[in-house]
Image (cartoon, rainbow, N blue to C red; front, side, top):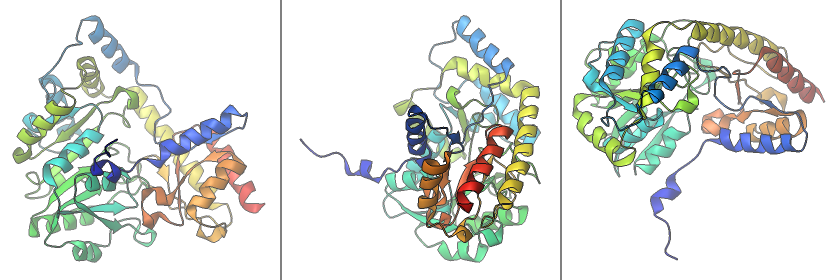
Length: 388
């Protein structure tokens, strides 16, 4: 049989899903497992969103739409970005997709080719490097260190840019650290992009989940609207992970190419899901406020609990719903080894920091998208395991 295309071998994966599978296999044997591996809100989708999705199906809105999305949703997204983030966005620049990952996929395919380089955060969402490699380009990790609050060292960033660099990926709040980039850092990244004629992919999927400070968008900086792609979606903010609804804001130069990629791959996003998205943005939803308040309370509880464990230290993340504790002083081996033992011995499903890049060694990522009781029990299990 003829071999597979070599580009398939360049694809990576998300460790969270493999850890989830292992954890569920353990549960099937009767073992109690607390799930802190998956980055998914544990809340139901707000009622108004669900009702609109159902109503749209009942109205027969189950047919094709334009590849870029229905006009009403694109306008609603532009209004949301103006109202909540102060960004002036032409709805014609908004492209709706089934989930936010396609925005990354399409942007990188449209921009990168063999010989190009793209800088991405390390630790960072693993699909950045995977998709850069798949596009045939070279991924260049940009280390994020605890001593800098998990923000990039700007001199180091400048040193990573070469004549082959074409794009920088920015993620704030960051997955896995929860760090929110300060305005000075955003402005410095924008300056580098302008000086070296680079594109920026701004992954803003957690931009509405900030507990300390505010979100600063590189898109808003002078001259950046025509060289920045905003990646965003509804999964995290509105607990809509399974609905698969994302969107991107693209420079004019990319609209035609990205639209063709949508048409050639998924055709369009489900009409009734788009209608549900309009309901999500129509007015402030009480469930969203409740969810955000719960995440803040959980963050404070798990950070305090982790910092009380000898050998563990944890910065307070300003956004998202992850903590990234430093476990080097535990003396229990690598991040992978600790994550494996916590699952097998303590029944706590966590991710090794190295699932997000080499710079994640010495850390774990724990999602606090779980109940306070479960989080407290997880911390107690980790403490007992660490002291055994």
